[in-house]
Image (cartoon, rainbow, N blue to C red; front, top):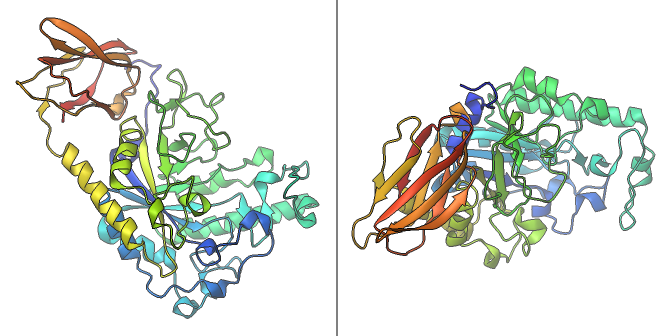
Length: 451
């Protein structure tokens, strides 16, 4: 194997094989819609408003599984600071709510439901923001005071925060992460929204704690040096760059959520860090708080199954994973109409990709694959998978249709990776021909099939 090829960890391969996950939001905006954490720093809604009457994490996981999800990430603490587990670090948590008389643990229930339904569990924790504690690290330049925001200036207490005050906040972050990472077993994925500030820039040493307590987790936007990193694709629309590499240049490619652009990766880079294409299941441009949190009367903004299917093609079909949002309602359930859309989306995936029309053998080093088509046979998709345990080897390819002795180009591209799904035109053809026209090493295809 060439020494220059960057390779994934076994956990990154397992993660890619999952293809679809869910990201579950349930926090104070569900109950207090006018609460916006960064506009009311240091003043959060009382824990008493958090009181679901029918909460069922089993119902959440049933819906996730119906959509094809193989892993699930629960937002254990969003930016309000309210914790869905009975943290001992501060009083603002489910333990101070009337739900189950303060004796409940939603994180624990979620983990149990994941185990019950065979879904790999993950947890999201916002290290950079805590409305309850009045901390907004994104607008606070560590060591240099506060970044200015003319419309919403930082509270004086935060603006004048001393280094000791910041260190006290970060000690809370580490203590809560220690609770989450030590009390609920091994986690499949850990999610940091917007990345984390490293110690050399004044942040907490999250990497050391991570490597101690959850060394095997895949980590979205994790700290430098994390063994199995995953990156953002640059938007919350479920759309990856068409040629999206799992390899990045660690020093030059920003992948920590700080810029809105498509991150295509860098095939000449030095780190395996595949993309995760996330999106809410309600339309982000129209729905409450970007569609991530449930809001009453917004059923018309639910992404219909057909649009979710298109997003599957622009995420999983472009060498990334697809992470779909789930906003839990005030009763503690994933709403009925949202659940129905998930169920039908899962059926569309199964219908489209359950049975291939034709699969070709993939001997090592072969560069041309020809699919003879029967009369009136019109496949919809070509699916190609590299065996990424050997790296991303293919650097250029072409797909052509042949008819009457003539060839016409359908598609050219650069990246295959874990999976590439190419929608096919309905034109009749005698043959479809897939050609590998460039590679860093002899190609190692895992599968090539027509659907």
